[in-house]
Length: 78
Image (cartoon, rainbow, N blue to C red; front, side, top):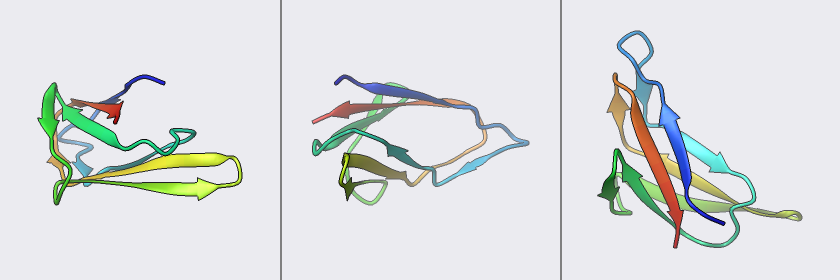
């Protein structure tokens, strides 16, 4: 389908440490990542994988980020 946008409500009281997400039903496509509109290349700071099952494939994303302020993640199929 299209891009997925996630608003992460990090704060001083509730910081975020190295978030990981599973996007169910994503399929076999890879993903491009942008944080607050800035592209993040796949590599040590952004890793992508897939979890395969009988019903299809899910996207697994890990981001090397520590945040104490809100930010937005955009994942676009590649």
